[in-house]
Length: 439
Ligand code: C2E
Ligand code: CA
Ligand code: CA
Image 1 (tube, rainbow, N blue to C red):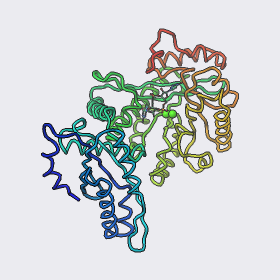
Image 2: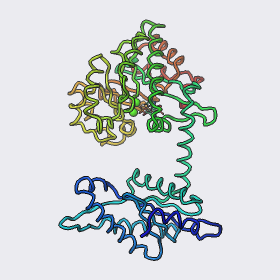
Image 3: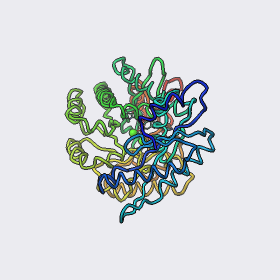
Image 4: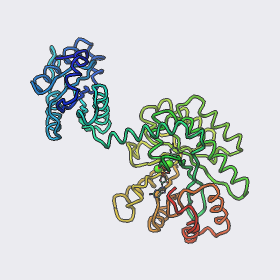
């Protein structure tokens, strides 16, 4: 078995003009640290020796097996065809996951594998190892055990880094703006809006939040962006109330976990409310349930403090994740947003309909408000009204719109009567309006 030093020495032989194609197989043992931590390094080392032995015997003279350090192995494999790579990856995973007998203990471990090819995916060991490493992370991420580097992955990584670069200067360049999607209460009254951020970059064009929010979260840029989102939305909706006394909108803002973890989050929020004279009881923070997975103990007192100020907490995308109806009573929340996927089929899928009715019943017992989102069809709106769903939101009522259009929307609301039969027609903004665009 070879080590990292040997690889450096071998590089000119494998990577040179006219060299044969080969593939790089990068293998990382899953949760190996747990074994070291629980049983000690001597057990860990013995297992690693057996892993190496198994690898060497699998590849024989068809591949060069190297210990990359820690619990990572690199194999330079002489085959490159897709079917050979699939076959070998499956074989390695099967062999590695067989039990290891060390003294009186029996261990089993899993592994993740990333594979790339020379010369297609890199022209040096460094670039190849990095591509194989990326593929390995993709395998872990998609929980698929192995992943072969693809052009699409390369393109995706390139795009991500392009977006991240552009994000760094986007705030300073004022490339973000907010749009607001109306929420309609039962009997057709205008209840509030959800604030949604939009990014328009001169080179990349209009980038959807689904694409850039996760990148902003990973890179930490969500903090600065979050400051803008919170302050701008509060400022905008406060302004609406100032213009017209009869407008008293609820404002819902999406908040990422990272933002809650930022030191001084709540002080900043309070400052925004104060400086724009926006009442805290008109504010809702939308969170996703992932927040409760790792950070429940930290979040609980924070959410209690937030709620003691009169600010509401809403659980977004409800029904898509791990939270079950029975857990709801233990969560520090005031509102549920039923995910669009349930609303989509409410009129033709009895299971989805039953689920929605169930959610509504339990929420009502627990004193939680329910918002149904993604309503696109009159039939869906009608059914939800029949089921006594408190609040509805979706393209059927309005797309997310800029502040100016929201102002017009509010005025037309005040002028019109508030019967449910009326609002669905008049609330669609004029045909000419920008609101027809999927902002
Ligand atoms: P979300 O919080 O679930 O927001 C609802 C999404 O559904 C929005 O997409 C909205 O435009 C879209 N939508 C509303 N009604 C309908 C409908 O009837 N049909 C369809 N097909 N879609 C509808 P958007 O604005 O693209 O946002 C996507 C996601 O990006 C949001 O999902 C949220 O997770 C995130 N996001 C957007 N703005 C912000 C923000 O300001 N802060 C944070 N942290 N995340 C944001
Ligand atoms: Ca939301
Ligand atoms: Ca949602």
